[in-house]
Image (cartoon, rainbow, N blue to C red):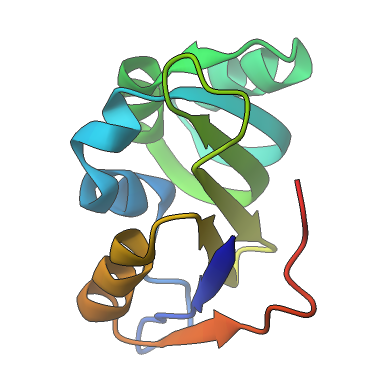
Length: 133
């Protein structure tokens, strides 16, 4: 897997990207995937529900993740690992990093190219230090 870091910030230096923005960009493949969530810290009207899912280590559908993520105001930390139906190996990993960035790793170069094109400040994660899952 290769990865990128999204660093888009507002004028007052807050992260300008939220999880739902990345999910919308990923589109149907993300919605059709199953997701594992871990290390979650987030805020919003559905934060408690998503925390419970992460704490229980329950894999959820993309449709549920979209619904819950749309109600979050901020994802401070968290790892979201997406699996295509019936696959053991993830096709995407989205990692919220301390409210300051999102790391996105994928086996799809098209996904990474789309992220580079649709967000303003995107840098490649060096392959030598990209975390493995």
